[in-house]
Length: 346
Image 1 (cartoon, rainbow, N blue to C red):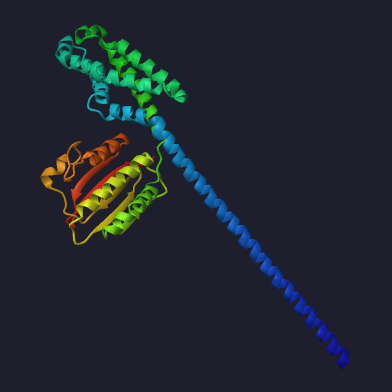
Image 2 (cartoon, rainbow, N blue to C red):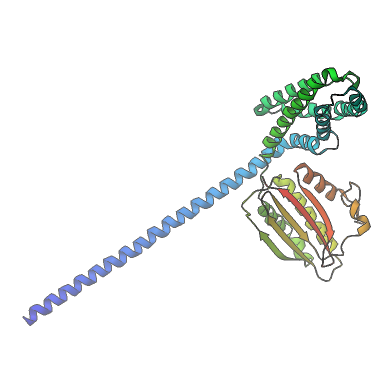
């Protein structure tokens, strides 16, 4: 019995050892397979992100090529001092024509001024927008609608205010504001179409720009200090990627130049994402701004550099305006200057 017991025990031990070996091999195989699958999954996700980034940059390049002139015309129209405001002025004047002949006579000088403004500025800009739209096959229908509504408005507008009286006041009071409303709707729709093509990852542009300037930063012992980011940074901004990169590079280069004689050379960056906009601040520890010269900083030919220049900030201001943004410069608490850009989210 004892011999039998020993044999059985030995057999059981051998069998258990065999099972343990199989289990260990299965566990190693399982870990290997899981690692392989996870690696493949992460690789696929990285590839998708890369392809999307390339596609977005490609879209931006196409947008730069196709829509930049149209966007510029539309921005000039909407934000100019004459065109867009002139339409609002016409709508207000004709939409509130009085029922009294004497009061209409008193308004005639203002009506004539608005009519002249439309024919001098607004009509020409509308023609330029229509002409540019016709170079894009996929918005020919929008171009036709804009041209149709422009022609309809011009047929309704009187040659001079002398022909406006209580006899036709009721007709003009309704027809002209409605025609202007349709025209503005076309403009806004074109602005939406053109603007939808400009989507840029601000943080990607910021990283790329700092990387490109790393040699200068190292050579001049300039430190990139605090980089503060707040909000939903997954949102893209409404801007051309190439233009935004050029502007940020110009602003950081200006900060570097301003700190050439400073004992402490540090650039701080702050990015705050809000509901419909993002604010970018770039602060330096340079000599700050001359208060008297602040109003001229964005002028085309103004510069504080001994070797000339002056186009950089002017260009930055112009392009920021095109993309419905804002840019300002002011002195900060560290004795240097801060440039602040407010950009629309796409």
